[in-house]
Image (cartoon, rainbow, N blue to C red; front, side, top):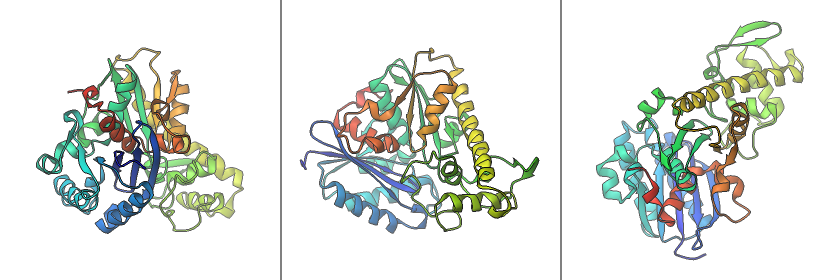
Length: 353
């Protein structure tokens, strides 16, 4: 592989994502590995080494992150500093490091540590900036394993109201629900079953992955962490975990009953995300022709929400030139792809300043 390549990195709290951009500005390979960062930095070091062994050398490393928020660190500033130190130690010898700082573009390691607020959780902005470079108007909906980003692009610019996690939560531009890791008790406090409303147990018995596995919509390889009970990731296993949420055993009902309950939870999650989209659209910045751009491992919900909102749908991967093989993972790992493209194609001028 050419040494002039760029690798884009998204350092999350639960996953490490990376995308290799070749000399021809085409995405050649995309990787996602589980990386439970809250359990220690050694998980990140090991994941970095494994990804580098798969992707090979690169002249430039474009980096964004959200892993600084895990409770391994006392605060986000410390998180950014320690992540920069690990990345410097693992990547600096193989290429130049560029940290994504939102509207400011890319900065070096020293500047990243000096102003961590610009680096922390800027990965959503990278994805939105790339969409803004490709489309004059769109609603970006990135539904990941843990969280969802809702970002308006209008006039070829990122039109987000919030920047920090706190601001984005208030504005519902960050919705803390995802297609895999969200506990079911975060989706509802009761559920219909057997002709009654049954309160949910406030226990980590089941997750959104179980719901979407039972509905048949969970993408292959999307669920990379252990199940809530540590057991098998099958329809039967998901039904068992789902049953526990309402005080039952899976044997208490038929498989069709658990699938029906799973569909109910899936609809509640979709409604929550659609509501955030409707709030964003109510700002009046987009006309009805502006597409909804779907990204993330849960973008099957984005496509459904686009139909619900009567908007055209575009997959994030359609905005990027790529080899055939990694196209499925391009949209799933949108921030990693975005920082590689923004740096590799010198498109940071399109980022709103």
